Image (tube, rainbow over the protein chains, first blue to last red):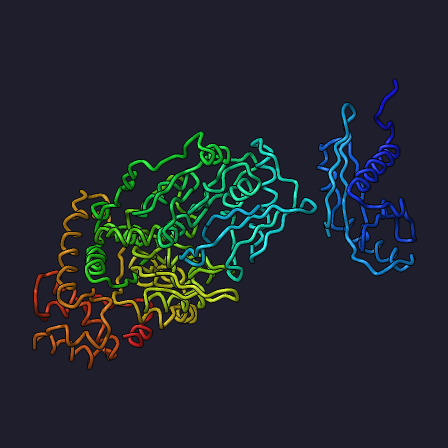
Length: 123
Length: 507
């Protein structure tokens, strides 16, 4: 049956990230990079605003059964995001700017519309 | 949003006011507790999350910061659960913040949202009154205890749900009923004791003058039975004394659920293997030990020579000052410890020394070692040494015609009243310097005492103790003066049968 819902989990994550980018753009940011990779790992979304660089972790879940998506961004994940941001800043030419860490939490039930929550400045 | 209410942290017997501030703000879901919370306080996070879920309240999935000022006061225990939960509900907007004005709360949360009893509710209630709290919410099982504090509104909660319904104005908390009459346990009566004429008399004197007592005698002679009869001979607890006793038991967590005021003098009989912290109190944040649990009552040390030397030494401060100081890295606290000491000992390791029907098989070496285990400084604080005798067949099987507790107690109370009006304290608690001036000793009695000093080698300390006991005997007889017979009886109650040379050394 034709469904708006992503079938497998990889697909769910990609769709969630697309939703997150839309939300960030709506918030007045410009998407600079998606799934930026280095040896350390991957940053889901990098966006920029005036004098501001935003590193964004996107977490998508089917539901709250195993805790909310935002709660899944634990201490280890937060430390990883910091390390990745450092790697990005070293690897990429950019003007001096403020740095912010955001989390976009997407809950996308099998039946129903996705809910998107944008948490700013979480670190 | 920020919510604020108050609770109390127990340090020793005193509870200190602690604010509970809960802020729910932006950020990833996390709970941070700041303000020197111990393990049980930090674990509140997990209990609260489960309690919220099982009560049907939404857990605020945001950044929750709990602060417990003053930040430098160490906090332990699970009593912070309830105030933190209330603060979270207010900070997340589930209950109106105005309802928290002047509110104090204490209690542990079960995973199902039930409010469980905690220790130290009475001290917390006293702290709440000092801080003019509007209302103190306590666990249902602690309500009778909290209600003992006059001029303080208290209410009991059985579950988190009940508290929330009350906060939003839909339900009510439990209000304290009439204070339950303190249960009066059956007083163990002196009439149960056969024979033991001298030991009974010594109990009467100990009760009349607040003297400490050492009973020796063969196993099974009734030393424990005698000691158990002492609380029944002491005056009834005054209201403020009872409050002190209840506070100690509350801080120790030994007050049963629903229990209110403790109305009878405690009788504590710790086993001789007890550790020093168990005896005088201990722990990082100290809890009261046996000497404080026996406050205003009787501490019975059976098999005194078996107690460790360190334990005996630790008894010195409470015996001299009526309180005990426990110092630890984090804090130093004082506990009250004014008790009547009754110690019991076998005359020798096998128990048969001085018994006409059994042969003592202990070697002289054994005897010396046994006697040397009795701490000198501890014996110094004991005024009465009495031997309890093995009963004869006639005494054992004959009619029980011994004098019951009531008349003996009446005599002891009358003697205490005399002492209080004369010197403001019981004879047993009179400083040595005051003994001679307070005791009006008749010439004949003085001659007997002098003879005892010369012939028995009575030391200065022994002299004062004999005089103190003689004074109590005179008070029991209703006599202003200490007469010869009083002195003679006092001297007869200084018999330490353990080892001959030890005896003279002690005298």
